[in-house]
Image 1 (cartoon, each protein chain N blue to C red):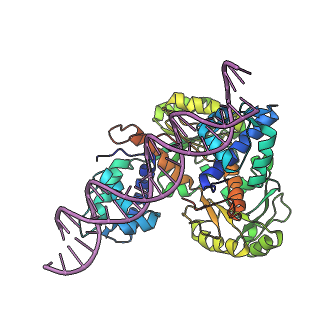
Image 2 (cartoon, each protein chain N blue to C red):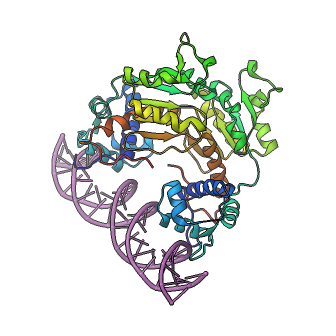
Image 3 (cartoon, helix red, strand yellow):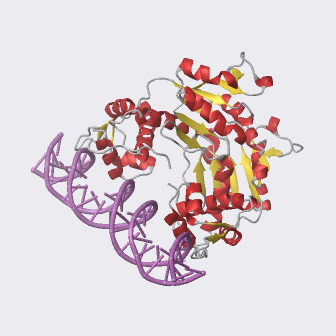
Length: 218
Length: 218
DNA sequence: TAGATTGTTAATCGATTAACAATC
DNA sequence: TAGATTGTTAATCGATTAACAATC
């Protein structure tokens, strides 16, 4: 482990882990760096380098033992406990997320939703919806570290502050405002409108070979 | 314009344009490279370089004229027409998107939704919902180039093929399957579960300074 | 003019790729 | 053993940054 991990390495490690779990469930026992590379779209060199960063052992001729590296990767990435999150904003997108079945499969559990509109409060629903003023206490009491922000854009930065004050360290932001990560909190912005706009740009410019060199996606 | 534009340059140009429109609406007339850099989180050098790539003219002492570069940028990026898209899959997420008010503000217009479930068909609703078998014709007839994919994961690649066959060149994919871009079609995957998982990884590893060097977000 | 900012070139940085010795 | 694959180092590539002459 002579090198620190940077963000893109961490994200690749997470993607290897996904693939490896799938391979394992299919009965595979070992895997080579080029298989893994193909699977996530990187060169074998990157795979070997990533693995050597965290001292994952391979066999000079036998590749990598899937059980071993799944275990090691899980240890490094820390995917043991359930992934408990809170949700702020129970409008259209928030509701869709609360009802999103994929989360259960991936071990993600929305513990509660919070909203400012009392008409939306409902402690009986599968994901209970509480007054947003109770959010801070809830986060502290349950030691939640990750939050989803699906509030209107004017409310976004205020609610974010409350989350951070209560101990949230990672936020997935659906409000159409670009929030910035800080030392206290990593923020991943999901701006759907922006993504669509960008697709238009990519497509239009992709057709103009006079302007654009390569436009491959990562 | 001695250099081709790569993907990240294009995306930055789009972000400049957003900021510039906002500045313009606030009554600003000119802007310096360091203002713009601060606004989108890059250095002034990057801004000047990006602008010189597309021959945007600045004044040695007066900075950039906002009107001029908004116009030029719009020309390059091609943001004149309305942004017309189709939506495949009218479940929870699809419905949330059809009702998403932000789109209207940004000039994005979902022309129609398509689904396999006839119970969901509705030609009267604000965004009409049709049989997915009519999707191809609709795309061709209206010359749509961008599609949103919000179908169950098993259906994703099949529906994608239909879209591409009908002329779609850019897709925003919400199905939890990583679809890959090709020469014919740029794909932007939005895997919400994966984003949340990644946040957990970032947060956990962020706390382990023995493992992680820098974890700033881009 | 003096001061400030662009436009562009060269230097730096980091990440990716290639190559190859070690070795199972 | 011979062949194949790892682990690691060096080379390449591209993007970012710094610097500075040109000039408004």
